[in-house]
Image (cartoon, rainbow, N blue to C red; front, side, top):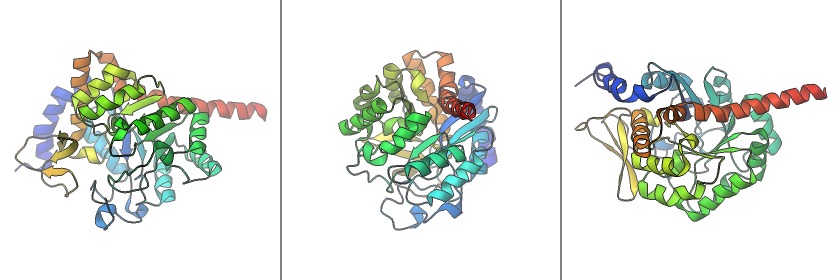
Length: 355
């Protein structure tokens, strides 16, 4: 049995050098990561009896240092940057998680999003916190645990006040779409189209490619956003090349953002699908979780690299250029963040002129 260091040096790193590193730019921007510390929890979901609490079991303490360490571990010869936010569920105290991410976001290369949603803040409070806290946008709050998405609509998660602010400040809105049908649900599609149409100044990023991890889900989803130029997809936990190929073929590579979903994607394994649902197949040693199967009778490396491989294989099948692939890993996402910075600078200059 290999030790952790032996596995990393003898198995993982050679694979990284051969298969992963050659397609990466000098800097990697991960557009979907989490960070939290124990003091933020109201309750740790997987340690409670909450319905859906064991849907995604991970680790209780994942501070910014741990996120940075995973970034260095996954991309050892690249500069790693990340868009980060806390746990976006009722498990945490809003102010604690947002204040932590804001303070740690002062580090170079880390871009915080505020966890907020419909009715969580007054309009003025939300604007004040975004401006004073240096946030680049909103990670839309999920008012439930697990996969009980019910009949919620997009408009139930984020409302007019939040979206008007995002429109005016050119903010990123990172949206984890609800319902069991995910983006393939016609009412969810209409909700996304409504936000895009009514708030064109915002940059709407659909987490996990609209939660369409399976080819059949993406086939029913992708046409709905083809003409929405301010709607993007992040690749967090999407490891099926056919799914990403459909994205490339329909909206092109410039609206695709590399993302991992750390700490989840730091596991060794791969997200696959059986019939109509995804399953995480991982090496033994990770805690039991819904839709997680463990075995040491398989070869596996980090899920973050499986996401990279899916992009690489899809790019080959769709004829995406090397330069466009590199853009997915940095330039596409950095462009959205720079829109926010430019708007902030413009408002500062306007305020100075008025004074």
